[in-house]
Image 1 (cartoon, rainbow, N blue to C red):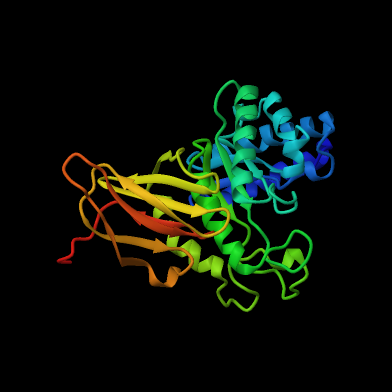
Image 2 (cartoon, helix red, strand yellow):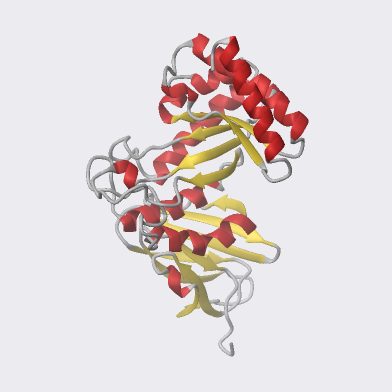
Length: 323
């Protein structure tokens, strides 16, 4: 909708939708991947900015409690400056946040991992903050890795590991206010077709590993706050601290080969280590035979944990031997 007659028709559509869904929808996203047609044309960006201004005004009137998002900017659009031009055209005067679809699965070796992805997102965040003159709330309304056979594909097990790592890493960037996995169900049954294999479940609704992993990490992602990233770790180890009330966790994994690492807890007590292994999410929280060893008063407790590509969610609260 770039011409006046078509834009007017779209505005009537927005009026109808917001009236029909009044009180039922928490988020409205204006258009989807506008940048796909031409992410570099400034006039194309300006036309979208006008559409956003009109549509957001209608949504604000009819659904004042809903969040209004715009952008749905693809990875190409981010790299081509489309998102930055939206901010220059006054995007944040009209909406509550910028939505992005920052896929990296086709970026090549070492650029297509969750760890490379969050590094890129951090740079994108800095650029957007500079352009807006303030932090820009980011809503990742599409994000995933497809599990297909062929170029840019990975297997279902690695898809599940990447899902867990991406959701935990997203918590480390304050500007990211939400992330939506694309999508729930595989679009088809062809194992070689990329678009058929993004889902959490297969076409017949049988569960993929990613579904069970997401179920196991959701309470942590939704209820715990990110505290810090451990910097004094081997280069292929990621170690993040999260907390809720008086409960603290370490989430850790290896981006390389499996390896044993030592964890320390300055305020811990002796007892058994409790953890969730996202490689085996069906077991939930498990009390292991491994123990926190505490050498004495005033000294940190420590334990050793075997890490691989699936995050382990380790409680810093020891389980006492008496149960």
